[in-house]
Length: 213
Ligand SMILES: [Mg+2]
Image (cartoon, rainbow, N blue to C red):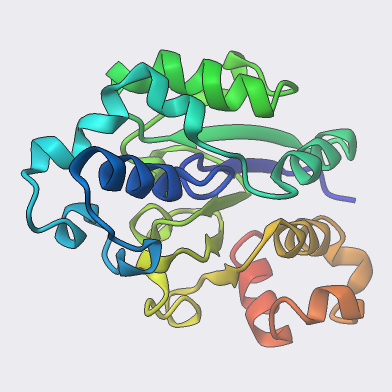
């Protein structure tokens, strides 16, 4: 088995930032925007009655991060990956003012097996070396020298992942299957078990593996 260095985004990859953000803005400004209304990376487009400052304000409120919930199975799969012998690093483009509350109320609370030594704060994720990046933002995956797993989110649903060398994943069991496939690629030699084939097509998976050898 190949030991992998797995890079993992935080917001809307291991936790549901957007759900909490939309809820907070709706409550605070008496609005009824739906999560599915967030169709673009820039969330402010879905809140045309608010200023940019108003839209981004929740991120800088310490108690806001207490309301951000982890994604189902993310902790279980990341713990499994570490137990398998892989390295797991969080790579987040967080604003510096948000880091303390975000780490204490989200990462270290829901993912206690990940320490600060395994966190990168990076605006340009393509500068970080790793075998895989899991991220909901296409711009963090494009051009990176890693296998690219795009975590589905409302803002990236129309993005053509496979045309851009990425594999779209819908949940953390999909991620687990991809990690397993990449780590065991030599042994599998194209005969993927059915639990992996349901995630991605054989061609997609071979393209993804091609980028890591
Ligand atoms: Mg993200």
